[in-house]
Amino acid sequence: MGTRRKLYAIIKTSISRLSPVSLTGTVRWPQALLIYVVSHGFLLASWNALYWDDWMVYANGSKGVEDFFASCDRCTVPFRPMTESFLMAPGPWLMRVLTFLFFPLISFVFFQFLRRTDWLNNQEIGALTLLLLLLPMYGARIAHIDFHYSLSLLLFVLGAWMTLSPQATVRISAIVPIFWSMFTASLQVFVVVLIAVLCVKLARPSDHLHHDRMTIVVVAFLSLAPIIHRFLLPRVLPDLQVTDGYNSIQPAFLVRAVLFSALLMCPLLHLLNLRRLRRTVSRESYQLGIGLAVLAAGTFPYLAVGHFANFSDWILPLLPDQSDWNSRHQLLQPFGLALILVAIAHAFRTKMKPFLLLVVFTAVALNTATYSGYYLDAMKQREFIAAVKAQEAHLRDASAVVVDDQALRFNARGRGIRPYEWTAMLNRATNRAIQADLLSVAYCSLSRPTMLITVTADQGRLRSLIRNRIDLEVEVNTLSMCS
Image 1 (spheres, one colour):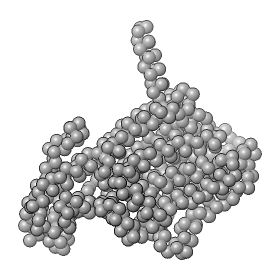
Image 2 (image 1 turned 30 degrees about the vertical axis):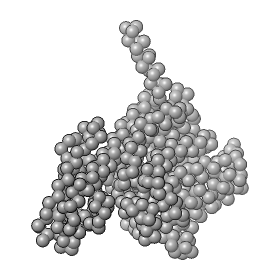
Image 3 (image 1 turned 135 degrees about the vertical axis):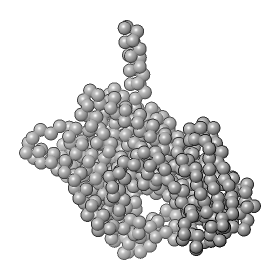
Image 4 (image 1 turned 120 degrees about the horizontal axis):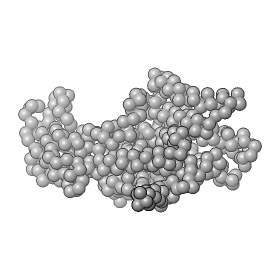
C-alpha cells in the first residue's frame, strides 16, 4: 500500500511539473510552447506544400502573387500584394514559419492584455492563454491565403494590449494596429469586445484609466473605425472593396445573425439585471455569460455573410477530417470558447485543474491529427506531381483531362481537391497548359477532355506517416466518353 501511494505521489508531481498551468496558476511558457510545437509540428513539416486557393495565388511564384492581387476585388488591402510577394520570394515555407510563430505571439500578447485588465487571477489568466494557444480551431491557418487573417489578429491583440498601457502616448498609438487589423472584416465587429473592456475600466473609480481623456478618444475612434472601413473607405478609395463579393452582407443571414447573437447575449444580460437587483451572482456565472457574449461577437460577422449557417458548422471544424476549409471562419471563436471552458472548469471546483488538463490533452490530440492530415496531403501532392512527370509522354497531346481521385483518405480536412489545384499540379509537372476537372456533362461538352488520370493508393494513413511515403499510383488512360 505504501509503495502504491509513493508511485501515485510521483505521478502527481510529474504531471504538476509538466502542466502549463502551475499550482500557483501562472503559465509556464517553456512547457506551453513545447506542447504547441508538438501539436502543431506537422504545420511546418508540410513546408512548401500549397492548399486550396494557394494554388491560384502562389503556383507561379511572386509573379503569380502580383497577378492574383491585381485581379482580386476583395484582396486590395494596402501593401498586401507587395508584402506577400516579398515573403513568397524565398518559397512558401517562409509564410508558413511566420504563421507558426504568430499564434504563440498572439497568445503571449493576450496574456499581457489579461494581466492589465486586473479582473482575473493568475490561474484564470494562465488557463485562458493556454486554451487560446491550443484549442483545435482555425486549422486552415496552414493556407497562405489565410496569412492576412493571422496577421490581422496579431495586430488587433497588440493594439488591444496597448490601449491598457499606463502611458497615454502608447494608448493613442494603439489606434494604428487596430485600424489596420480591420481590413479583416470580422474584426470590425469584434472590436465591440475591446470597447466594452475600455468602457468598464473608464467607469471604475479604482482604475488608472478612470475618466482618462486619451482613452475616451481611443474609444470614440474605435467606435467610428468600423463605419470608416465599411462605408467611407470604399467611397473615398474605390479600389479598397475589401467587403464586397464574398464578404457582402445578406439580409436573411443578417437577421439570423442578430437573432442568434441576441440569444447568446441573454445570459449576460440576465446576470447584469440580477446584479442591478443586488442579487448574488457567482464568478463562474459571470465568466460563462461573458464567454457566450464574446463568442457571439466572434461569430456574428460570419453569420451575417452566410457562413456558420447551421450549428453543425460550429462543431465540424474542430474535427480533423470533417470541415474542409470552413475553419477559416473561426478566427475569433477561441476567445469566447476559452472563457466558457474556464467557467465550466470553475464549476468543478477542486477538479478544475484535471478538467483543464483533459481539455488540453484533447486539443493536442485533435491538433496533431489535423496537421498530420496536412502532411499526408502534401505527401500526396508531391508524389502525384512526380508520377505525372514520369508519364508526361502520355499527356503530350492532351489539353484537358479528367482526374479520378480514389485516394481521398489522404486529403486533409476531408476536403475534395479542387479542379484548379489539379490543374496547377499538372502544369507544374508537365510545364504545359493542361486543364483538369472531375467528370461532368458540362466539362465533357465544353472542354472535350481526352485523357483520364486515376489516382489510387493501397496503404493506410498511419503506415504512410511512419514510412513517410504513400506509394501513390497514377494511371493515365485515353478517355473515350467525351469523344
